[in-house]
Amino acid sequence: MRARGNGGVPLPLLVPAALAVAFLVLPLAGLVVRAPWSTIGPQLAQQEVGQALRLSLLSATLATGVSLLLGVPLAWVLARSRIRGRSVLRALVTVPLVLPPVVGGVALFLVIGRTGILGRPLYEHLGVTVPFTTAAVVIAETFVAMPFLVISVEGALRAADARFEDAAATLGADRWTTFRRVTLPLVAPGIAAGAVLCWARALGEFGATITFAGNFPGTTQTMPLAVYLALQRDPEAAIVLSLVLLAVSLGTLLLLRDRWLGRGPGQGVAA
Amino acid sequence: MTLDAHVVVQRGSLGVDVEFSVGDGEVLAVLGPNGAGKSTVLRVLAGLLPADAGRVVVDQDVWDSADRHVPAHQRSLGMVFQDHLLFPHLSITENVAFGLRSRGMRKATARATAEPWLDRVGLADLGDRRPGELSGGQAQRAALARALVGDPRVLLLDEPLSALDARTRLAVRAELHRHLSDYAGSAVLVTHDPIDAMALADRVVVVEDGRVVQAGTPAEIARRPRTDYVARLVGLVLLPGTGAGAQVALDGGGLVAVAEDAAGPVFAAIRPESVALYLERPAGSPRNVWPLRLVAATPHGSVVRCDLDGEVPLTADVTATSFAELGLAPGVAVWASVKASEIAVYDR
Image 1 (cartoon, each protein chain N blue to C red):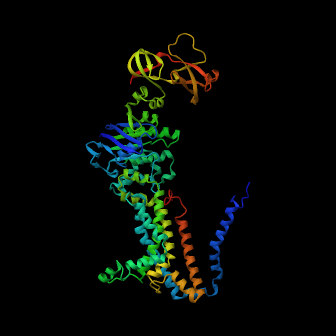
Image 2 (cartoon, helix red, strand yellow; image 1 turned 60 degrees about the vertical axis):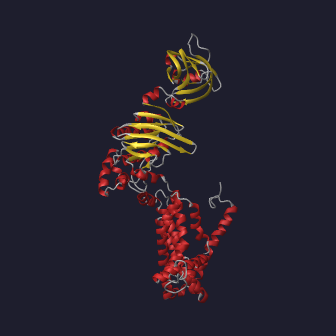
Image 3 (cartoon, each protein chain N blue to C red; image 1 turned 90 degrees about the horizontal axis):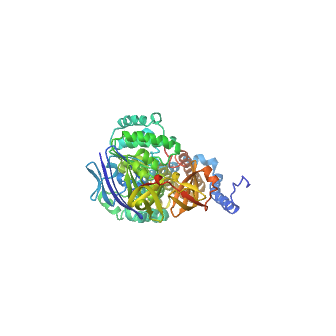
């Protein structure tokens, strides 16, 4: 009999696994240990902190909303339709996943910037300027985060039994009704998981945001930007801001995990 | 109401070309081995799979033809799948009401229409449950109610009993029989189980390798199988040959004496229980005696089914007692005899 303690994990796997855990957890622990707990109250009370936090939550949520509205249909097209060039389409969609976010920011600037391909007519005819606004933050975050949602929902759609959709068709449901009343509820857990990933990615977005939206307190300075700036002039403030981000991320993850994640797709919303 | 179908479709290496029609209130069983193309035919009838050629006509309405394809959701049909496919996120009542709702009925009316159907299939008290909380038999009953509730013109059943355990299958088969008798439209039942086909269908078409190899009433199919597959299903050994008087010269060599005169290409069908086995050549002068070799023996209920090879390939059912007394084992040489009067002969 093997010892119960290590659950029968071979040593060559156990040691690296333990190192990996330490590597992932220690920095976070360090953050907690080094936090200036005595001055944390006044630090948090600063107006800029509240502003940045509100802006971050708002823009990440809006970005997730946009990603859901556009990304779920796109995932359906990738998983279910028989249009040509689907694999090319999927490759294109995943580019932002591997693209350095700063490059994404530059690209957005070139297209929607005031002299950009779309940005110039927007400015000349409607007087609308996108860069350096809160809208730009949402756009930058959506650009970077939506692929996470698309990939995860597409996976859920592929894993879901398409014969349920056949059954719906024999019951008189057209494809849109089938999507609404059968497919969507079946893959709801996958969509929730994708939305959490997408939201977390949007919340942490830095590169594309600072490139495309700039760093203006109140309108475009999100938490990650505030953390980076604070680190240069007031490291303690940076630690406090980081803790807030950490708490928000962990809180969301735990909350959603109990609610949606960790259940099989078959029982998803049933109980 | 009549369903006329000629389904031509290529699925991988299997070319399916099957033609049949199903009358008003009639149940047609499509019987065949796995991979024969039965379910493919059903998917074409349902509109889930486009046919390459042929046509599907219900009454005067063309559902499929060279220039027309009515999509599945616009066909008046109900379909029951092997593993029920009830929507896991909806209650049983909502599942049964689904077809009514998607065809435009209001929610309350749909529920009110669905509930009597739950009652008819014996699930009146379980309407609020989720499919995951039902037994296999209950789920399949709910699936039947879901398929029948809109009073469709065509009912398609795809192996509706094969996912059930033996005991449940008996009960659900009996109930299915009752509902099929009440059903006014055309029903097509796909199955690989001859008992389902015999018990539920008015007519049977046997499909092998994408082609209809035999069609008739269940009794005709059982009495006069035309392929080895069907013969095995109904428990007969089929020997093709040429009749000449009271003898049939088998295509594979050997002569079989029969009771009535036969001429031309015929089948001789032998029931395994009518074959007697001996270790020595039997005394007297039975006309059908062949020296054979036992190649395989498998328990089959209270008897042992013995596959024999030699001049005339036969199958014999012997009781477990005689099997032991004769000291039979694979490889043993035996004499097999069959009375001429026990052999059925019919034209090929």
